Length: 204
Image 1: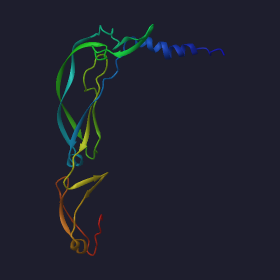
Image 2: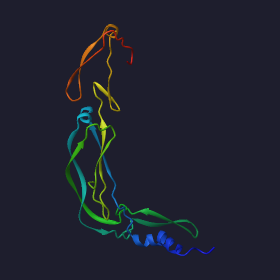
Image 3: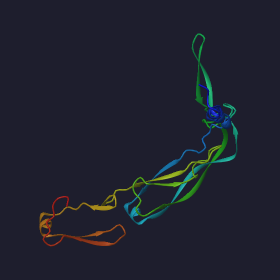
Image 4: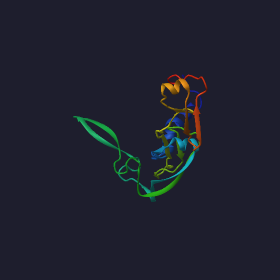
């Protein structure tokens, strides 16, 4: 059962090699994303809209330094006595640096983002601004995500690409015909009417 040539190198690259290369850099390569709900009307989704929104982010001031409490690891090891001669090692996030491994000063920075809501976007669609989230030491900032939340509309309900209207008709209108105006989402006035001789049934 001799190992094939080069297997030793593969194992060292997978295990020891990766750890050595990382060397204390336990911080994420990218910071966490920040999500903001954005309430939009059905008109905004139908016609498209650009909204200017102010957000604040944490900006690092000066250079971060390695945390002395955890030596830049972001984790500390505590010993807990379980019984005579029995000790358990517990790894915990460093409270001093909140697990980042760095000490740094930060200040709030306010910025205005132009959020472009494109025609035909849907409820729960996301609009992403890359690298615009909080500064984090030794990593790229995360993204800011705006998540669209469609507001209820007094006239229309959207079902995929269709607009539905709920309208109560009298028995006479259902049998003999009806005609009523509707204001479309783009402001146009549309006359909705039945065909001569057409009998309208519930949910028709």
